[in-house]
Length: 216
Length: 216
DNA sequence: AATCAATATATTGTCGACAATATATTTTTA
DNA sequence: TAAAAATATATTGTCGACAATATATTGATT
Image 1 (cartoon, rainbow over the protein chains, first blue to last red):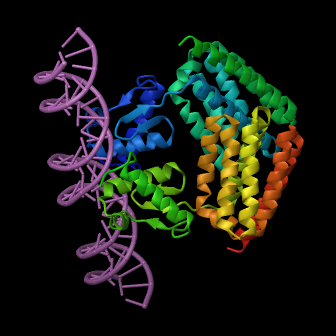
Image 2: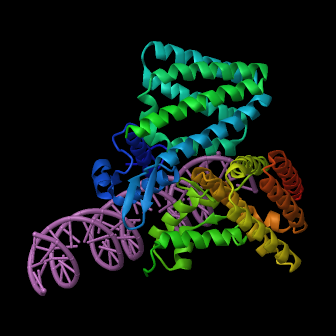
Image 3: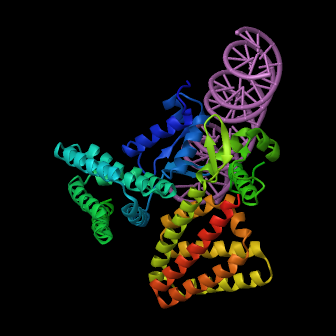
């Protein structure tokens, strides 16, 4: 039971993360070590370490002597999470505008085109993944790895709530348009345009979140 | 060997973190599990978990099958770290300016006064701790717990480099002055003033960092 | 019947040992 | 002697078992 350069704990944590992102495990659900040992056919040691990794990623919450649970978020916390994501995006895009290379713009442009294609083909999940890649690229290209890590962390915490976005597929059209605008702004180094588009996107995201949470 | 509501792993991780912040363990140093078991008189299990906690806090880096090391940072990464801290401060202060209460201002004012006292008494370390408390309060008072967590995380990553700041005690005078300016800006809701003071503080911090890293 | 205490069960926390891997040392070979 | 191979040692990764704690169940008391 050992191959590649990853450790058992890492692989287990990734599998659990996927389950959570797919909604098989929902916020508040408990993660029982014994159950997981049976599921993965290992002892508890790597399971426990996998849970620590997931805790590091902010997906899961450990209550000492009580157990580990998929992290629950109040409405306020979700709003806070979104607010931070958009503030970080502002930072990344501001930096990116100054430093962007032609290759980077090309890569972003291609992603947008691909997104349009997947959306026409009704491949919502795929489109969403591209959208996440695009957003990640903003941070990768920003050139500040600490900022990138921070974004990955925050975005990781939204994994248990992916289905919110996925259940509003019409919003993706808007997202694509807004990203196109941002792309144009990057090209022309028009910061005001970039930030305005981003603000619109944020407002729409918050509106969806409101609608979703109220219907809970 | 069990009391309080904390777990062994947590307490061990805190003790190790203190050692790192005191410089007893320096960036790049390896953390050997066996050594730590002897030091803390436990088995390896809680040690390993303590190391996972420290990894979560970004203080320590785990290389699979190689070991765990106090996180090393390149000059670029330190600059990135500082940049992010200041961008986060901008966000927190912008929010705080709108929402601040009189009690909050009072608390901040008191901290500044205490800082001045400790500095006169040449209690550099104590002054630095107050400075950190003040900075943390900016985020606590911002009302966005996600932002607060993010700051704590980033600031935690600077723990192995605390001695940089501590070895430039004259800089604290400047810091206190700049915080006073920020305080005034918060009182009068003068965002431009706040951000300008912050920018000055950032420039000074970067200059010190440059000087420090070059002398390495 | 409801509340509390006592007991039983389930679950997490810790332990010591072995397995797998990486590092250091010695031996072999050219 | 230098490089490569073989061996030995050190270290991390995983395991199964026991200890401590939390939760659920049962029984006692009113």
